[in-house]
Length: 111
View 1 (tube, rainbow, N blue to C red):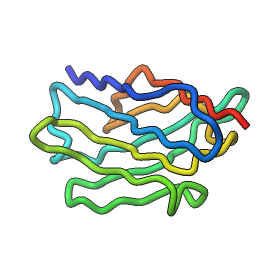
View 2: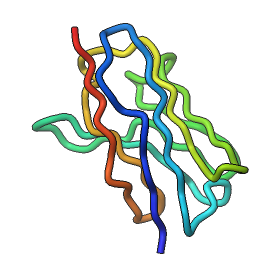
View 3: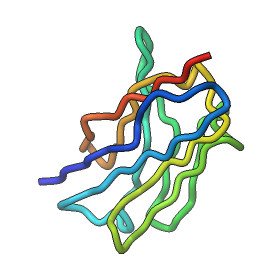
């Protein structure tokens, strides 16, 4: 059984920052590809960032240069640092690994 628990969402003004966390149990974040997805109201879920076990990170084009995905193996946690947030970043952000989803954390960016 794998559990992914996200935290760190909230309300922020445009241009602000948030750091999302995803703590895993039942799976080591260092040995599987981990990813952040998001789903905005009325839109399909999309991949925002992913990190392979080797540490290679890929980003959604609109997130590149603003978002940074990282991990702390000792805490078995991955992070998504989001800077210069825009209203279009408003969404529920989900942590994902190989068929397992977290419940999500809501990020709301006001203009």
